[in-house]
Length: 193
Figure (cartoon, rainbow, N blue to C red):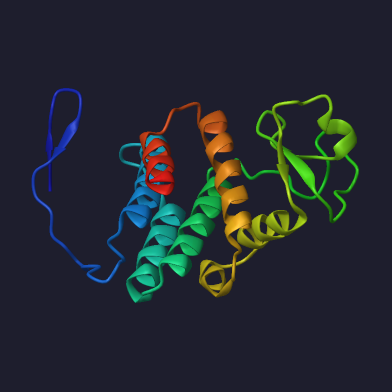
């Protein structure tokens, strides 16, 4: 239930329709989920239905509730973040170089937040702040952007690829959404401790 205020409507009562009791309750999963909440908070508009975002979150929480594995849970969450970026209209270009427009070769390339996608080795020289990304991490990002969420849990992601995905998100999200995320700091601290 909502009550009208002068500038904002206020939530006065809530009815829980479904409880997610089995979502892994550890700091890492909580930090990544907090990031999703921060992203959504920036983009939800009052009184607008965001069905695609709602469906993505429901799908994510249903799957997390069934998962007992932290690695699979993190895969699902990162896949959901890439899906959310796509829904919001910030899908990175991962097939063609954003400098010369040539097709990206299956080798190490570079990710440029400012260019909105990948750069080849030659074009990277003009974007020194870009991040080196392995061919396998690029495949994973493409997979997340093209496939349904349920397929993400089945992936076996190596730690170094996970760290690459994390670096891409950590530089891309603040750039495209023009916001500093508290959850990114929390995730970074919980990873290093």
